[in-house]
Image (cartoon, rainbow, N blue to C red):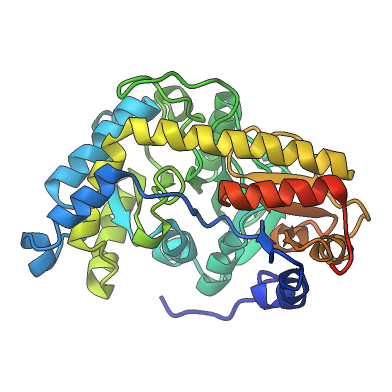
Length: 388
């Protein structure tokens, strides 16, 4: 599984000059560039972590595949929140040290390499491509993976990355589109890799209140009507970073084809890719705490609506995304870097669309405090001011 070289435009040092300019503004910089949560971790999660700080899995080595209670909590969550019975479709799961390492290592753990091709959306999270390059395989981008004719007949296709709700654009792929991808991939023996870390941030339907109330979620690749009741050749990734503000906990999981998960788990055990025992306990609490997820959803929905409105007032064609945490919009100038400079003069730092595959766009994150949001809204409404 030796690592090959990689190349990527995803280099945050490229925006350092804009960061320095924005920091000079009175009141400081408003950072809308990175999707790093700032809100409190749910009390249930913090209490669980505290209680687990000196239990058996803290003192000893935790289980790579997840301890029994975590595995049960994750299985129950898939059934309750995603409409998926993992056992019934031949699926297994394994916790991962955040979703990024799972994405970056996926092609290598699938034994892909030179001569193999991995398909991904043209506009997407950069680590898909980096992970493919690390394995030595070929990256192939397509505008829309649901247009299966654009990739199904290409030589050497071994895997297809999809992301719904998408980062950066927020697009949600419907069940018909997901099922079409699964059928096409199976016809050529390729694996479908579905990144669903924003699944509980679906803005197409309102949420209901209550611990056991259904939370609107985007369609899951493992739903029976999508996968035909069979998880073969499918892997689904999910993260607790966004739904529960647990990015620093590095808490995520992969679920799907039991044979693929079993093989990955064996490698993960040997190289020590194991979620710490106390974090496994915290994951259980997060998966069970629907009220906290609902509360955080409302915070992000409110921030996104306000941010979209203010960006429109400043001249952007900004709209509420179908899902996820970001406003993805055309650059006013037509060039993301020119807009980055313009925004920095107001003390605002965005994320250049070139990082995600489209240099004509910008990404604005809603993962900021309400105080910082109000400052951003005021600056967008009034425009640049001296000495900014």
